[in-house]
Image (cartoon, rainbow, N blue to C red):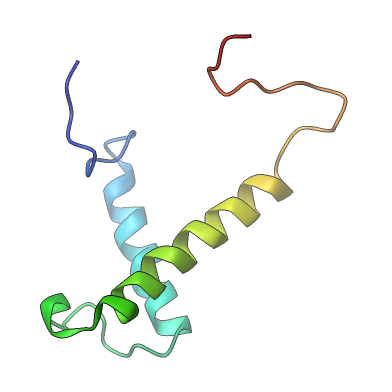
Length: 78
């Protein structure tokens, strides 16, 4: 099965991820991010949005991990 790395793992996640991206941009003070030509933004501005999204997703995952007594291998073999 071949898929682009830009496609979400869950097809229905696209709308959520877009809304999340605009929410994060707003939190970072990048107003009207949805209407902005992303090519007109600096790499730093675009990078802040993506990086902050990842940071928030990691925080969410850490807060919702099973208790420390269980083991998670994330698909890696031992």
